[in-house]
Length: 153
Image (tube, rainbow, N blue to C red; front, side, top):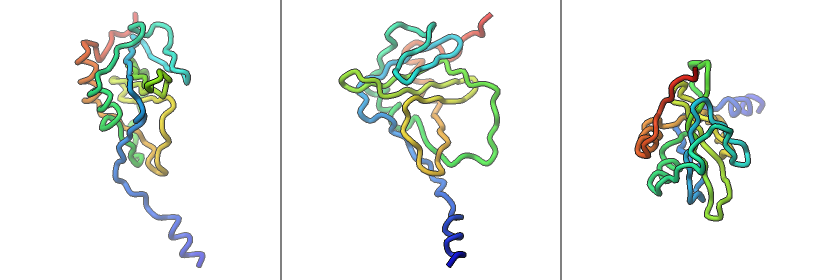
């Protein structure tokens, strides 16, 4: 009997990626940037130096992509390439129809990392969040904004 229980504990996790729909009730998303590093607190406040004031409102199609195919939870890779940084310069803040802050996604094109605030819990074993850089790049550039910023002097 004990061997049967142990075998069940060693069962492999299904490696199929799981798309994330982080804030389905979001009706508004605003993009902010920072030349050094953007930070979003749990109340939806961006750090000093973030711009533009009030953010840039995303179109409904952009909101659909950010809430759909842009993020995926996967089983962590066996070998992870370590980056010495994670300094996101772009953040997307999600709000519901009453203007309540739901959460955020911040991305770094240099380090290829993603940071989140108030994000849905991943499925057991699928806790590695990956982002589709092409989707984020298309949205950012469609709004006339840069992907990279010159390093501070």
